[in-house]
Length: 158
Image (cartoon, rainbow, N blue to C red):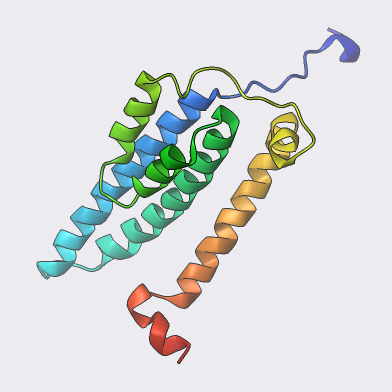
């Protein structure tokens, strides 16, 4: 096969599949965090919260980013988008929310790469977009780790 005849298209994960993966990962990391909390508060070890908390925080940020991106692509109403974002706060609610929007056809179709905006650029340049998204998530995660637990934020800035 010559260089010019090689297919260079990037296979994209459809919105339904991406959202299902991230919603499931968010639910699993919630479970790990809750197990870690049980271990911590029963005096067994604090390592469960330290490890699962960091992993869950990272996946939580990925879920928020994918919810906003999928909602924009699928043109969800603001109330549905807010409910999707809020579902990450309640343990295990992301999975039922994913099924709910799927049953209503809100995850049907493919990505819409038209337009000159950020969404269009990201869909035309998926590898660069993934890299950019990871940089943003890591930056936010680093800032949150620097701030420490939310209970200490008031004293840090007082």
